Each structure stands twice: as structure tokens, then as C-alpha cells.
Length: 516
Image (cartoon, rainbow, N blue to C red; front, top):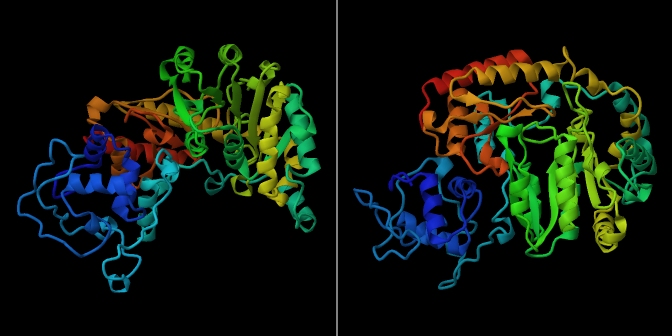
């Protein structure tokens, strides 16, 4: 790539022109040697870079010399090159081609070596929250550098502690939770979740409609796998929490992204949502409160979504993991409470509200018109039984966590940590020339916008890498949340104000002279 004067974005654009599915994250994985391209992608890369396919795979045979002057990429980069291919110049260890898995001397003469490639089902899967930029941060840490991680919503490293009562109750029950539970979960946990759902006014919910999981993530995957056939479409917000898009695609469906409007408090654009409904659409995904924007949707917006789902007979998946992290005296409304005639699946858990992300305890609640989803529920039950059960020690503290004093309430009022950190980061970011941000109403994320003309930004992954290398601050690029412009990034504002102050001062200094 260096010899050809090519950036990742140049190869991505050439791939698009040639009809090859290729993203920047894929290229980063190939460059680092962590994954190997499929055969068709390999041919495209070899032609574009004018090198031998076998050399790209780490083989020495047939290696030509590098010409003194780099050749221009052909006008048709996806076509077969007539000239002999040549390799890239000597690269650093982090850019070296993937090593051979077997010595050439062990390969029978004339028999090509078999390579094992990742599934094509992963072609449209993205999870940059822990992606190539995070991998680079890990490499820097291993070399002794300190990196401030503002990329993952993990409360524990920032001094947020699990309520003492939760820890105590788990320790008292450990000896009783050594075996499997029922596949849906412990009765005590599900009863507490059912009562919580009733307080949120979810209609037609019984204890058999409650499923515990190893975090909400497992249940998202399970619920979509039970529903989708190849070609089914699901409306997913953009920006989204990328697991939703990934799980839709892995289940054989197609994630169709509807836009959330930054000019309107990041609320869903209902007209855009409506325009993307087809006869293959089966469900709408809602993330409320929203990750990555921190938006909280009012009843008026939720009613419009319910009306749309009702008109087109769609299911609703509502991710509400941050429903207890709402600020400014506002109230979270569960969309399922407004749709008793529709079939809804509502997700929540304790990872964020009780600062126990590592315990991995979440749940989903089926509500509304369950008569239209009997076959689907059978599929959910089958997959639930196949995974045996979720983490039983973590289930044992659900009843304790949902009852009594909610310590998170102390964080989200004036004077509380999350509230004051939200106030600081919002004002600090908006004071940086070329940066604007909508004030989040919930969760602990903010999704600022960059003036791409001012900073000449065309590649948000490169921006994240440049910030990491220069200031040792790790953020997640907007593209990691299926936002299709290179003008946003997400910051987790869990660190204390003095840490956020240092980070925003470094960001201000970085952007004062940054041009991509």
C-alpha cells in the first residue's frame, strides 16, 4: 500500500467500483495479519496492489522484485492486471503478511495448501467498539504506554462500585448456584423482572414471558436467530449499537438503517423509517435510551413508531438497558406499554444501572399480542434450552438489585457523578472550534460532530488512529455505529471530571492543528 501510495479508503472505493464488498475494518484486519481474505477478495487485492496472491498469503514462491517507481493503480482496479504483480516494500511487523500455518516443505508437490477462512456471514459484521483501533491501543499498552479508554461503557475501571448489598447477597448464595437453573432462569429472578415489567406498564406479561441471559447481547442474538429467514429485513437505527446490525446479518436477515436526526435531539426520522419499509420488513429495532447518542425518546415519537408498526404489522424490539440512567427529571417510557395489540420484545439488565457489567445478567420480556407469535416463541424456547441457562450466580442477585434503594439514582441528579460529568463533557466539547454536540438525556455517552471541511476528514478510522497515536486517547469512530459519514465519534463520559478535563484539553490541542 505504501509503495502504491494507497490509503485504506482508496482500496475501499476501488472495491465499491468493482462490486467487491470490502470495508476499512476488513483491510485493517488483513494488514495486521489477523484474518485472511476470501478467494475473490484476495484476487481483487492482488490486482489492485499489483502483487502475487500467494505473496499476500505469506508465501515466498514467485516473489518478483519491487520496481524502483510505484505503478499507478489501473483504472479498473478489480480487473486482472496484464503486467506481473509485485509485492509491497518491506513493512513493519504490524503490517507484515499473515504467517504460514504450515511449512512449505510439508506441502505435497503440486498440491495447493488448504486455507481456512472466516465465514462469509461475517462480511457485513462490524464491531469497532473493540475493533482495529482498540487492537492498536492494546498493542501500545503492551509496549508500556498508558491509554485513556473512552471507547467502552464499562463502569468498573472508572471507580463505579457495585452496591454492597448485591455483592453480599451473591456471596451468601454462591453455594446454592453451582448447578444449572431452568433454561429461562431462576424463579426468583424472573418474578422480580416480571414485577419490574408491570411497574413499566408492559401489557400481558406473565412469568413464562421472562428470559434471563448472559447480558442483553446474548438475548439479542438469540431472539433474532429465532425469527429471521434469509432476506428478511429489520429496521435498525443509524447510529446504532452495532451488535444489532451484526446479529440481524448473522441470522441471515438484512439490516436496513433508518436515520436518527441530530437536528431533532437525535430522534428517529419517522418519514425515513416509513420510506424503508418493504414487503420483506418484519420488525423495527428501537434503542431507547440510545447508545451512542444518549437520546431519550418522548411519548409523541414512540406513538408514531407504534402507529407505523401497527399499520405494517411489524414486531418491535426495544433495547432499554439504560432505562434507569435518565437525567433532568425526565421519565423513560417503554414502547411496549403503548402497544398492547402488537408483539414486543423488551430488553434490559443490570450491567449499567448497577455497575456490574462483568456479571453478565440481562433479560428480555415478551409482551402484547402473543397469539400472533406462538411459533416464534417456540423457536425462542428451543434456542434458550440449547444454551442450557444463563449465569446462575448473577441471576441470584436480580431480586436484590431490583428491590429497595436504587443507588444509581444518586449518580443522575445535580451533584451526582454522571450528571456532573455529563454537564462537563457537553460544555467542554462544544467549546472546541469545529466540534458540536447534542446534550445527552440518558446513559453515559455523547456523540459529537466534527467539521469535516475544517479538518479535511474523509476517514473516521484514520482520525481515531491519529488521536490515539498523538494523544493516547481511545475513542470509537462514528462508522463503528453504522453512521455512514466520517464526521462523528463517541465518547464515554464515565471518567471523573479531572480525567475528562485532561482528555478534552488534549483533544483541543490535537484539533488545533489537525488536518487529515
